[in-house]
Every structure is written in C-alpha cells, then in structure tokens.
Length: 220
Ligand SMILES: [Zn+2]
Image (cartoon, rainbow, N blue to C red; front, top):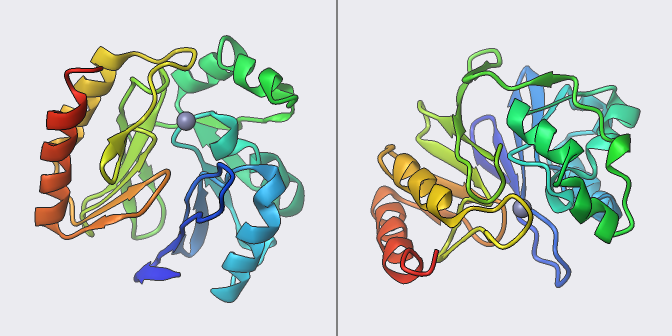
C-alpha cells in the first residue's frame, strides 16, 4: 500500500512470524527488510498490486540481520541483481554469533551476500535517509530516518506498544534503552516498525515512546 509519495508499506498480518516490508521508489527502488523466503510470494503479490516487479528492486537495505528480516535478500540478488547492504557491525554479528539463529532454523547464513556497508547517510535521488545506529536488539541494528517526511523505520528497536527482544544472541537491554531514547528525540510523524502496526501522528508517536519507557524500561 502506498503511504506517502515514494513510500510503500507491506504490513505482515499472518500468524507465523515475518516482518513488515517497506519500499521507497525514488527512481532507485529500495526494499527495506524483505523478510523470510517462505513468505516471498506474499511480498511479490503485494508489490505487484502497486506496480512493482521483483526485477525493479535496485537495493535491499536491512535494519538488522535476523532471518525474519533479511533471509529473502538472497532472492532479490538472484531475481533483480540487487545490491544488499547493512551496518558493518551487523555483518560481523551475522558471520559470528548471529549465525546461530539461522542454524537453529535450519538455514544457511553463508548464502547471504552483503555488497557494501551502510554509511551514516544513504542518498537515493531526492530522498535522503539518515542511518542511525541503534544497538540493543542486535549489535549493528539501525533505524532509517527520512527527515523531510518525518518517517522513522525502526526495525526491531521499538514497535507500537512494545520493544525488540534482548534475550537473543547479541541482545543488550541497556543499549536498547539508550537507542530508544536517542530516536525519541527525532520529529516523527510515522513510526514504521519491523512488526505490528504503524504509529501515525506526532502525538501518538510521542505517546508510544512514553508508554514504552513506562512499561518496559524497568525490565530491560
Ligand atoms: Zn530481529
């Protein structure tokens, strides 16, 4: 579904776990977190409804390297010859302790290619995304902030009414809190998380940060 000029959102609503997927069409087509391979047909159907084919994708960017966010990177490299990027620290994690999660699910992380690492800013054509390093859920997790539209794509840092898990390999509650506080200072009109529903409107986004801090911060 088209949310804003140049921004499309595919919210996962299945019973099994998968992530929300976002697409920015700025001449260059960028897919953010394509999710699990087994749900690729859902993603391709959703994209097709907005007029996109798999081969239209130029770049896949990942908020982090958990399999429910980045496993289908492989398919976009195969189908579209897309380039794949994530934070440098996240690739190190993926090749190290992060690979445990893949192996537990019977998946092979060595198939994932990372073509280059994210810098602090990702300039497409008109769209400029700030890459904010937000460790806690994983060591190299990032959020993507689009200042002109006041959009934050938050991965598994913060959700509507919740926060990312810190009990998986590489998780750290203190860092997660620090990262949430850091992004809470941004002007955000649309909070687009990796799972669940979006939070729209500045007041609702601010209220969501307050709620999360009150309910979860003592436990992290
Ligand atoms: Zn995750």
